[in-house]
Amino acid sequence: MRKKAALTACSNGLSTSQEENVEKLVKLFNNVSLETVKSEYLYYRKDFSERKGSLRAKEFMKFWSDENISDIFDISGGDLANEVIPYLDFDLIGRSEKTFWGYSDLTVIINAIYSKTGKKSVLFQVRNLIDSDEEKTAILGQAVNEKRGKLFDFPYEFIQGDEMSGVTVGGNVRCFLKLAGTDCFPDLNGKLLLLESLGGGREKMVTYLSQLKMIGAFDAVSGVILGTFTEFEKTEGTTAMTDLVKDYIPDRVPVIKTQFIGHGKDSYAIKIGERYVFKRYL
Image (cartoon, rainbow, N blue to C red; front, side, top):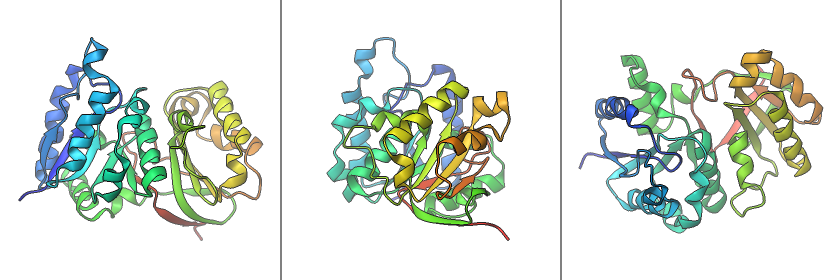
């Protein structure tokens, strides 16, 4: 039987104005030999009780139970993803061979899955590939079918150090910090901590970095990956975050910067829960 991709929205519901793009996404998956099933909670509902976390979680777990579904793509974002976490069956998720894909607010579910099961997920918004050309469609096909390829091969540069390795955790910094103090926050010892952000200027970045420092994150990790910080870098330049983090991250901790992990349409994918090795280019 032909494998299927599930489209979910564990965070804020999509506007109905996105229906055309969702159908384009369905066609894209058809082009890489995946049928598509959609969550009944994909779109925003004015009555929040009709789309509460327990309902979204039940629908989400239905896809994890379906043996014909190979990948689950969350195409939402916003603020509400952590509402579903208490209702998830992590034992079932941990036994599954499916791969979960999402970004932004889905950082909380991706890291919860890793913390609870050790399972890898992909930080990536598949909607970025809508209206993509044949080459990008082929790249998606390889990424979905083989979980490797050009979609994961993002360029980077070292800001501190020459080499680092470890299992990658993190994602959107605002959303990642929503897990702090919960049993879903990953153990940071020896990890590579990925940080990126869509909104927020200098004040918010200082807030996030200060909290990470106060909980001992930068003393525990073996390296830091800086993605894009869209609003901050738009107003203060692409080096704004690399300059700012020097006040928070010890000199002994390697740091790399990439302009291709984050909220940009040209963003690549990265696996949370995967062990990476990064070396300075010669």
